Image (cartoon, rainbow over all chains, first blue to last red; front, side):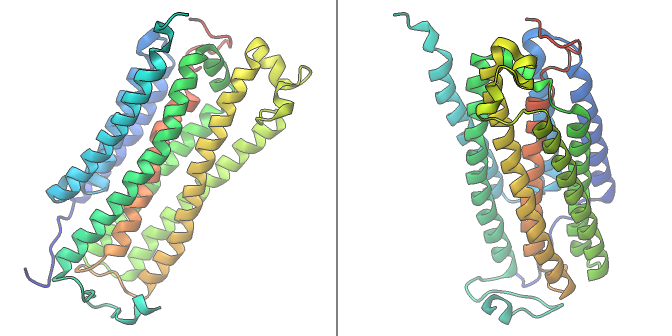
Length: 100
Length: 237
């Protein structure tokens, strides 16, 4: 409870590493989009995008080093988004099942 | 102005309603993430709209996506990643007690990348205007460019372009707001407000900047790359 706070300082090489990974993954997104994998096209693109987003959130946004409250908030954000996608998607994607 | 009244340039600032700087810092972080949760849900609604219509009109989506400039979209993705790195380094400079000159240097570089993104985006929009790919009555004009490109799918392609302009436009608006806040942050940095013991304002602005980058990370593959594997034009399903 001192007046002076000491936050985690991310080593420079970690920032550079994340930057390189983000550029490489962007290239990977483009290259995998050139291949027609049928129903896997979008899941592969989204998997790469999620990895990129996690790198930004955990390292650039320091969530890896934040307290549990902030980490809970971040997980809640994803959860709330999934609730919206899940319920609305469940409605729209199953409408064709009802005939007449 | 009252907010700045108790700000001591180069010193420690603790608002009277907090016990210590750590509590003040955690409150700022929590508030910023609460705001970003609402932003995630805000953009989420548009992504949901995208999913629903893409599921209804997959062929139109692929044809329309193929009309976007993958090179410009890809370069812009890289530009935003560069800006995120320089933003993170601006905060690191404050954390390690680097002076205001290196802080402003990294912020200026971030500003440069952010502006470059918007300039490229402007050229992209201009190209779409010239090709008549602006959603509106003219889009479905049988003698127009869009009708020639999309044929029977022209009305569905128009929905894709509506979403393209709303989603990228809203993202660009966030970039413009970010650039406005960048000038404010640079001003505070110049006045020496961000020190190793308190750089909350700079860190919260960084969180916003990274959030806007993340939105683009999802927009790029979902909007630009759907038709990439069908380079000859004409989707195959």
